[in-house]
Picture (cartoon, rainbow, N blue to C red):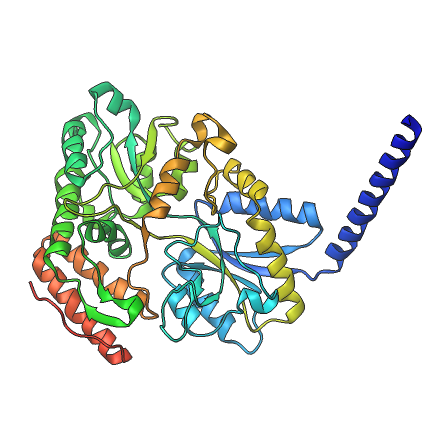
Amino acid sequence: MIESTIAATRRQMLALGMLAAAGAIRAETQPKITMLINQSPWFDGFKKMIERYEKDTGNRIELDVTPFGGMLEKTRNSLRASAGTYDLVALNAMWMNEVYSGGFLQALDDIEPGYRLPANVLDFDQSVYWNDAKKSFDPSGRLLGVPVNGNVQVLYFRRDLYKEKGLKEPTTWAELEANAKVLHNPAGGVYGFGIRGDRGSATYDVAPFIYSHGGRIFKDERNGDYTVALSSAASLKGLETYIRLAREYGPPSPWAMSQDKLIQLMATGKVAHAVAVIAIWGALDDPKKSAVVGKFDAALLPRGEPGRHASAAGHWVAGIARNVPTERKRAAMAFLKWFVRQDVQVAYVQAGAVPVISGLGEAQFGKDDRYRFLEALSENSRNSVFYAPVKERVEINDLIGLKVNQALLGELSPKEALNQAAEGIFEIARKAGYKTGRGEIL
């Protein structure tokens, strides 16, 4: 009996060895692929996953790591060429509509018929799907990408200062403002609130204020109604809240606040609250980069009154180029499928990056304080909004950013900023041929 059991075990081990060997042979025969990706706070964690993938499978991925400012031009050049330079491209939320609508990506179920994303993979307001007929995100459309970074905004707050002052985690912007007022102490080197206001960032950072108060940019773009809705009483209340918090409780010159400056202020303990992307969490809890390790916590962004919770989606999706050879498309697909495995996503979090699947809370990490951000990530991901999901999004984003920045500076009133932005968006939509209208004027 014992001998037969041993023999059976040996046969099983031999079979597993043969399967592993066969897998190694298949991995070695897959071609090397090239991926365009941005230099960012979350890149180090992603790089570790590439190294793990190469070690686990024998496949090779060459990364072209590019500053954010040069990404879009490289993406456009490669995707529009007769033969693409990159097999995989990392797409920021700002560019997805342009790339999707241009037909530059290969649908994943064209490469592997019947493929669907695992149920626990976050789709960030359905932004991995594209419907050509609707010209918008739509889960009934084609699956064009897989998230590689689950970047959304969260509320950062100093839990040590909250404990010292006996404050409660805010659920509304009014509650946040009250807490910011308590903690605002410029003479002591701590500002009550920090948020970006430079032209390149203002639209993204004002979006949760506008949407959480019931405002929006278009009336119902996902059903074909592109009537401009930005200049509304709800949007005005959101913009006024953003400006008041930035001016009254923030560092000087909020109109010049960039992401690098905000991170520096947070990491040196000079702001008590901030609205910022979850991707910077790893740096804040890294003793080599931060003086506030363990002092920040993350929470769901507050809601308006009345209103809802809303976090602007700022995630990254990897798409497979249409203009590369079939065998490299398959190799790229193999990596994307590997990447969303649960064990890989656990390792991704441990590497200091932001996961793209749900359900990685206590079940995976227990009460380990290093991963206290996961609940806030999940909550804000569920409440993420993708503003202006049209191929002209970059142009619209730049226009709103300019007007919001001018309102922060005091060059325009909040009403003037919204009216001028809405007028410009109407012209963009009209020229692009959308079913549009001017909408309300404040």
